[in-house]
Amino acid sequence: MKTNPLFLNLACGVIALGLWGCSGKSDVATATATATPAGAASGPAAPASAASPPVTVSTVPAQQRDLAVVLKATGTVTPLTSVDVKAQVTSVVAKVHIEEGQFVKAGQLMFTLDARTDEANVAKARAQLAKDTATLADTKRQLERNRQLLAQNFISQGAVDTAQASVDAAAATVTADQAAIDAARVPLSYSRITAPNAGRAGLVPVSAGSAVQANTTTLVTITQLDPIAVGFSLPQRNLTDALGALKGGGAAVTAQLADGGGTFNGRLQFVDNLVDASSGSVKAKAVFANPDGKLWPGAFVEVSQTVSTIKDAIIVPQAAIIQGARGTIVYAVEDGKASPRPIKLLYAQGNDAAVSGVKAGEAIILDGKQNVRPGSRVVERKKESKDAKEPHDAASSPARSDASKPVAP
Image (cartoon, rainbow, N blue to C red):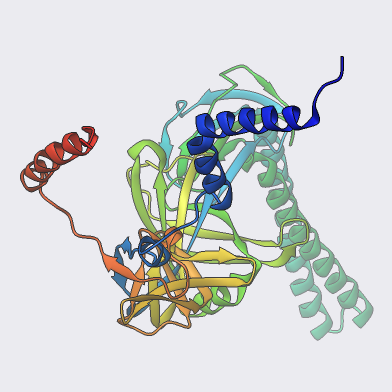
């Protein structure tokens, strides 16, 4: 059976018209959506979205004032003197005159050692001195008689000279005896052990009857507590300032104990003559009055020292500084816009930073600086009270509910 071509063409045309009639509107909408890119502005709304809204920020004025360069470090309390007292002779402790933890004065008797042997040696040397003194007196009398006999021509001059030699020898012997007595007194003096300096006595490991070895046995340690020192380290960059402070009697140094233990004022006394190559620092020491004994040897303290002062420095908050790949800047408000200011950080301490590149009195952006760009319009932040904010929110609620209702065609 043959199909008429005219009939087939007519049927296809009818089917196509029916499909277009059912989906025409959706195809037009689809074509329109395809032709218009998503997110593109159309009509009068485009200029409104192109203009960026102003950024709300808070500002602080740049100040011009003197800024003290304060060095902070962790120090260790160290005594000015700490002496391990040892016996200088081998002997036995006869008596202990101090107690552990007692404060002693310089020269105060602390220990007595058995000195009977040394006392006997001194007595022996004195007896020998007495004997030789008597011999000297006898030789002098003989010399005087020989001189009288020489004047009467009973003896020769040689006999007088021999008598003179005997006198000189006896005098030398007496002198040697006196030196022997002094030598015997030295070990005898070692039997009385006194405090080399004022301070606090530590542990006493011996008692009466204990045997001690010469220059080996430690009897007690005397530590000076008032005044007392604090050792700390100075960075190499502050070495020149520290040496200059030493010439003027030492810069003021403050030490603070942890946990509210107190704050103490002292002065820099010593700066080492060598820079530590491993750390780039120099050892220093400050001295503090310690009448109450609150600074204890070995304790850690926070040390603060004013090493110099920057005159007429421009001060801005550290929080306002922005570190970027192109350098360090702050944003200043100029004609209602954010203007970047390249700066150089001179010194930072606490919340303040001394910088160059900013003029005194300029408004520096603090809060909100992360949201601004060069040339951004900015407005000062204004705090609203809670009472003023609530009516505004209440008034805006109906508008939002009305907008959510469908609009009647």
